[in-house]
Image (cartoon, rainbow, N blue to C red; front, side, top):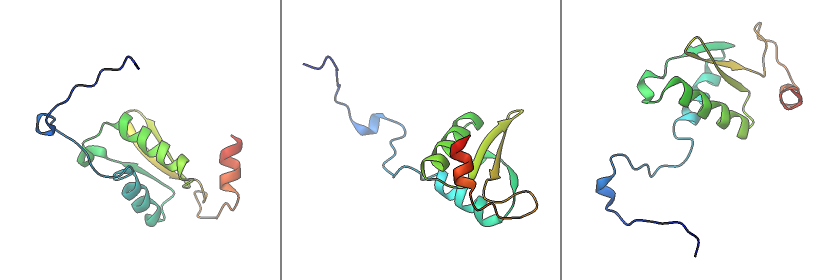
Length: 103
């Protein structure tokens, strides 16, 4: 016996059951950001239903796991996205992944 207790219930009793795949929110946000070709942006999470902390954590984790050239970070309660494969002048950084993994 595992010691875990599972209680049967009707799914209608749960307000929000998500049956979609992981990344349903992170992928479109990160993809849209990369398509802007901007170096850094402030992202407003109001329409996502997530807090700045929750969304920032999700975006950081997704970008790192999928080796996307994006850094998500928070300053003063705001969420920012920054490109890692280009500098602020638009110059390509070819070894951005190696530099990211080294730090």
